[in-house]
Length: 180
Image (cartoon, rainbow, N blue to C red; front, side, top):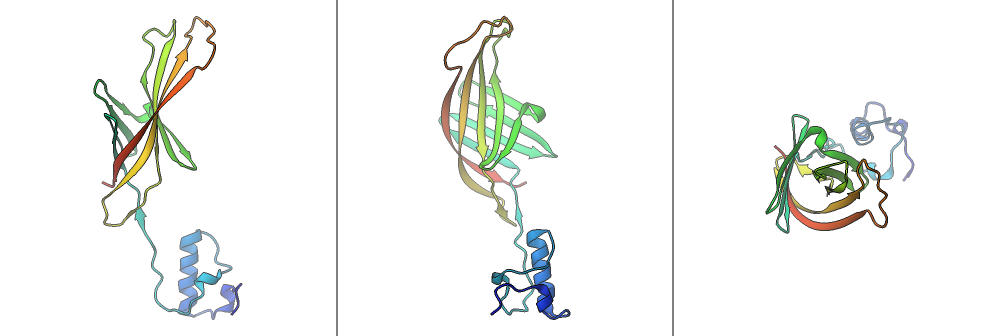
């Protein structure tokens, strides 16, 4: 068996050639000049693409905290609720950063009342893992982590601060990811 076959090794009008060419183009999005061995079974069944959809609504909760994040009409919305706080964020108020470990979302929960004298800035950050839903499946559960960061600031007066300027509180979250 040839373990390094090329499409040129398969007859030009063969249904197998067309299936493999379609599969390679779908999987790689690129050229179909060579094949790898796992695509070589002698089958003339049509190739089937595996199609998934990404959720656009996420509901999370943990330790008295509820977070709802959604992307509808390309606009991000985030609701943050605890026993004492309810805040709504949208659009550019929500920082997103795609990373190797998921999408990191960050919002500013509170700022000092007077920026001239400084105080604490509190930010909520949490990771959204990559989630694929099978076509027809509307939701799945998932777990993730959130971090509340409290950062000391000196304000515009520029009084120097010394020592650790940021502290962290982690929060385990359970949630549901949905596609609407």
